[in-house]
Image (cartoon, rainbow, N blue to C red; front, side, top):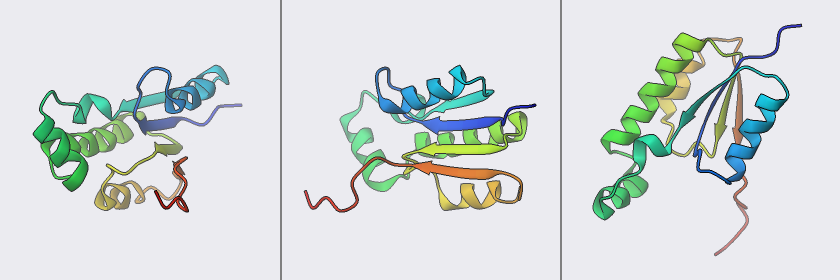
Length: 116
């Protein structure tokens, strides 16, 4: 039986739970293609980091979305796994939804009821 092909996008910082989830899928034998958010948005510039997180309108965020679309076209996943996909544009999701067979998984461990 062929395993689902999974395109996994998120923050691949070592020891984060995002990496643990991706690694579990790999250990279960699923073909997984990973897109690391941090390769696109991490910057030594405090100003650029602030703009990235507050506006989502920086070159790195646009590049991240282009990379997701590009990898999806090449890899042809059955599943798109977005781990805290706050940097993924709605238009990127709309383009990916053109494939009616692709299943979307959105994982976010933040507590939406937390008032802090």
